[in-house]
Length: 57
Image 1 (cartoon, rainbow, N blue to C red):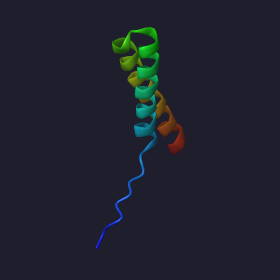
Image 2 (cartoon, helix red, strand yellow):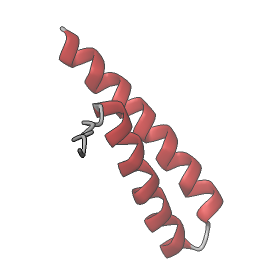
Image 3 (cartoon, rainbow, N blue to C red):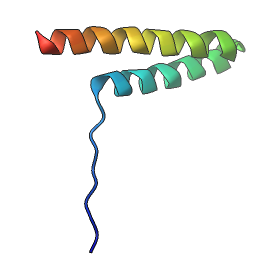
Image 4 (cartoon, rainbow, N blue to C red):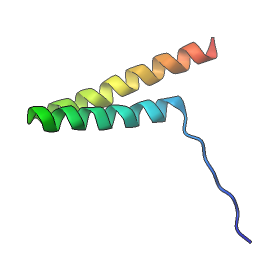
């Protein structure tokens, strides 16, 4: 018997993933992956926290 283990990701997790992808893309284009990857993660966390705070209001 197979269980259906579907998990929905939170807005914080989605925004961090989008930040990683965006930061990697900009980093490859500008040839500075280290800077843009870390900035993408930071922006993703910030956007995720703000969206989560607005959702709770």
